[in-house]
Length: 273
Length: 108
Image (cartoon, rainbow over all chains, first blue to last red; front, top):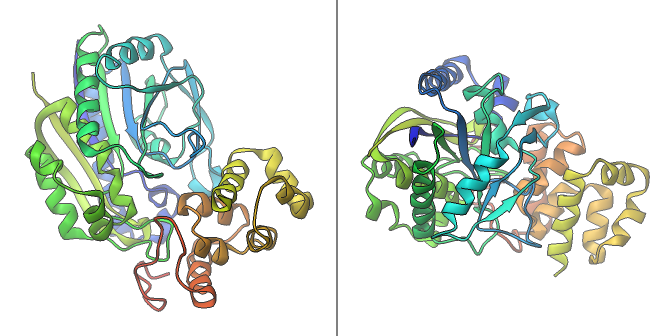
């Protein structure tokens, strides 16, 4: 088979953890968009969900930081954060170690990746799963792109990784769904938390939606840091999804929600042959 | 090097309940295991989120230390502003403040 679904969404911990601090009329349309994405995902009947996240030192640290890492376990656990803080209960999430192994082996033909037989999910994966597979019944294959501890892999490597992921997905018999999670412009975990550059976000999402490779890869990290904050480095996850899906994207929801610290985004992308 | 050690402490604490228990029991003894400056040791023992922010710790690591200390979200955000006022700009890393101390972009 191949990819049967591709999309991107926000993963900010405030989306669940500070839900009550946002007005209902800004929060509920986001939640409705997540429900819409959940329905599309279910309709695609995936055997496994690859979720490309940009984790935040839950598993990987600067003592040994991979640019790209993929989980290879039959079971994962999360959230690593205080469940009361994130307002998501601790749970086990099924994986598929054999499928991971097959995908990793193929990806390695062109991109060197680390693998991990242990992985504790942080909000970068748990917040999307909370909405997209709320019964935690779809086997998940977690992927991490280092967007936290520079030096970071160049954007064209995130593209190459997405291409490798697609090639690998095309070679396994399972139906694979792919979701990239991250922020666009944001300055989380600083006093600026809530600052959002909406114009920059909309411009990036337009490049993503028309799957314009050159335009997506033209950002320098220096410019991204200036215009979109350190959180903007997470565009790598969205870029990998575009490289894998190859189609046109459809923005389902975008709204800056300062108390959630990010321009909250839900989008899907056609999977082109 | 010691900023790395400061962040390593936060990484260990965030992940490991036994380190959390040690911090609550005897933080001063716990920090001796890390190669830290006196300023860094004191900041950890006092739970001085504002100073740790100024020292340049990655915000994602520090956010969970603040939650572990029981700080509500608005108090955590304000503690970083207070740290800037008291100690000056962020000295390292990628989590510098770009707003002004009176500018509450998310209302907190």
